[in-house]
Image (cartoon, rainbow, N blue to C red):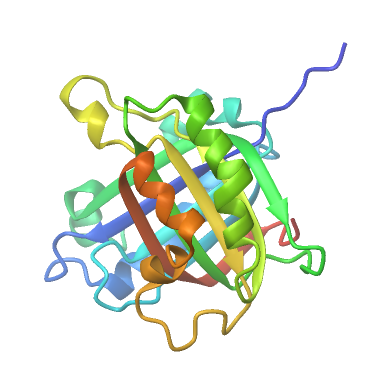
Length: 237
């Protein structure tokens, strides 16, 4: 019997904590040209594609986003990734990178996906990343039902919408930090120009009555608008 794969993503958002030591441009160059290829090549075939995004708001505190698409998210736990170096001669003092940069991450399987019938097969050039911390009093069944029957209907009629992919977060801290970790992640892809003239993407997404009911089930909602900066591997969906 063939094993069933479980596709998922590794979502890594970061910011330079010491820009006086490591300029942002140097960090981006290291990540794009050194670290991402090293990560993808650590286990050939495990990662289908990688996407690097830049926050549209130049003042956003977490401007740098990379999404790795795994054919089977179980491969994320392979020990080979522990051997990927986070030091390099191009970094101050040779690194490691976590001396200068702060990271937050989501790792988990794909649980839902929707696509516009008119969407192209390439990656959308505009991304809305939406992480949701759910109230503990709200059951997963109730929250997912709301998302699948109400919220996605509002998103899918927005200008330029291409597709939405949802993920559960398996990288969740225990103890006191558990509450701060997002439980769900959604990536909404849009065409170029879909958000022209809008500076507050949260207000736009929450403009309908159905979307505003998010407050019933979400304790915390982090929404950021990104533009696609670079692609690796398979560029089709």
